[in-house]
Length: 411
View 1 (spheres, rainbow, N blue to C red):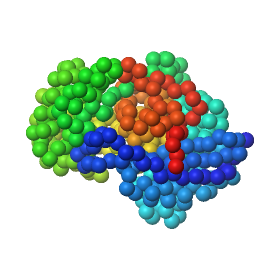
View 2 (cartoon, rainbow, N blue to C red; view 1 turned 90 degrees about the vertical axis):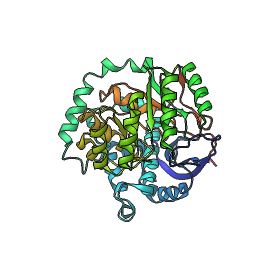
View 3 (cartoon, rainbow, N blue to C red; view 1 turned 180 degrees about the vertical axis):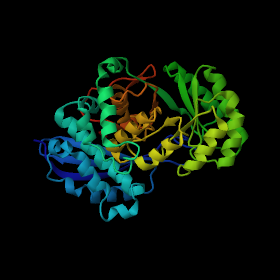
View 4 (cartoon, helix red, strand yellow; view 1 turned 135 degrees about the horizontal axis):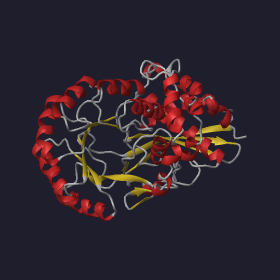
């Protein structure tokens, strides 16, 4: 038996090299994790992450302390056998819920706690997280989730049927474990990088086997965005997938105007073009700039907002993030929603791809999501005990027990 005996919380912050991580609205990021560590009586620990950009990371840590206290004394197998109930109790904490609900500091804290539970569960079984998840029955998967507020579009029976249908054909998709999951390079074009640096990074990225890259846009001067977008297209070639990420910078009218000017460079998607809460604005934008597709979700906090986005039909690619949503549980729920609406799920990787390299395997094998690619950001590699391995532009399937979240330098 693996019983949780103590909980430690760490405020981890990491400096980045000049210009790395910068975008149109985050000019001086400090990549940071609010870390939950579940200590047990078996010399096994569970590590969970929530991602921030520095200031306020301590607030998430304080919320973790409040939300996680009830886990002490629980045996991990028993806890996870009906985790949806446990998750719902933390999600709707009778006092902390007021500070959300289901968003902001409290929801980030929940993410860290939930991810620690999944990490511990996989380690207690001695398997990587992807293996634990693909071995679960459809009924067991649903017991990890909380479907409240989305039953109008995804009732329990329909979710079960969806999982059972794809579960029956999972053997046809197991080959991804050998081939690995494709990645795309999101670090060639941070907003503060010079044009020359971007050109050098593209050559380096191509040499590493990537055939898809992302450029940050949303500069104060739109002409700079246009010049750099066409620069990247020329350097990558006409067949490569080039994504553009505005990080919420534009108003709706600005987004429509600049998207029309970007059509000729054929962006694979435009990501977070305007405020993430403006669902109808995104619907208007998607209709105006079709066939250019929108990628949304980096700052969408919960499954209800994702449900509403999917209902509008404006989402080309869904970017759920397990370190912004309520952890692995809510990520799986959003993945089910995306599958129901037949929208590709391409996670945002606030975890630097550590947890999500497991989740995309689960998405493909168990849920039948198509294989596209997974974002790759290398800046914190040296801080993980088992950093994600990407070879020739492909994530190598992790084999170590857990969710690949352990950090080497907790302070």
